[in-house]
Length: 195
Image (cartoon, rainbow, N blue to C red):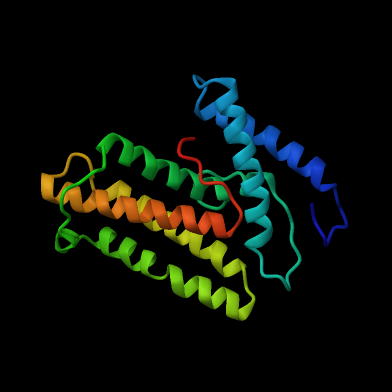
C-alpha cells in the first residue's frame, strides 16, 4: 500500500494478506506448534504489524506498507517487539520468578544499565507523545526498548547467574516485560506470552 504510488487495498484485504504472511512466518519458526496456536499468533502478529507500521510514521508523512518490514521479527516491526515480550515471559516462566529479595546494586553491566535507562524513559515518552500529538514517538520507543532488552538478553545470562545476581536480573526482566506489555497496549497491539 502506497499513498505516493496511488496503490490502495481495503483494510480487510490488507489484514487478510498480512495474517497469511504472518502464519507462514510463524509456521517456519514454530512448525511443531498446533495450528490453533499458529493461527492465534499469526492474527496477533498480523494486526500488530499493520498497526505498528501505520503509527511508526509521523502523521505528516506519506506511508508505504512493506510486508517484509512490517513482519520483521529481527528489528523493524511489531513482531520484534512482541517477540521481545514473549521472550521475557519465557525467561520468567523458566525462572519460576517469585524471588525473595532483589539487590538492584548488582545490576552494573552496560547492557543492564542501558535497559534500566530505557525503562525509565517510558513515562516521559508517553507524556511527550500526548502533549505533542506524535504517536510515532511511542512506536520508536517501543522498538528501542525491545532492542535494549534483546541486547541485555544476549549479553547477560539470567537463569545461570549466581543466585543474588539471578534474582536482580529476573527483577529487571519482569520490569521489561511489564513496560513492553504497557507500550504495546498503548499502541493497541497484543503482547503474546509465547510466539
